[in-house]
Image 1: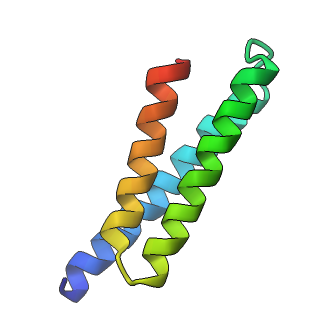
Image 2 (image 1 turned 90 degrees about the vertical axis):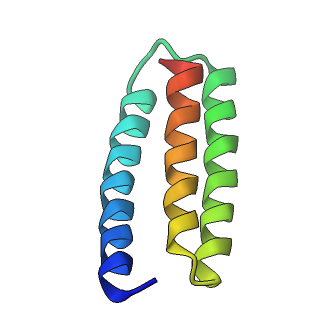
Length: 80
C-alpha cells in the first residue's frame, strides 16, 4: 500500500472510530437496552478491540478498518 492509500485508510479509521463512539454513547444512554443486550454489545466490542489490536500490530490498517465496519454493521443489524 502506498503512502496516499495508507493515509486514506487511516482517515477512514479515524472517522469510523468517531462513528463507533457516537453509536456506543447512544446505546449506553438509551434506557431501552436491557442488561443482556449491553453485555452482548460489550462482548462483541471486546472481540473487535482484540482483533483490531492484532491487525494493527501486524501493520494491516485495512483489516483494522474492516473490523470497525463489521462491528458497526453488527450493532445496527442486531440493535437498531
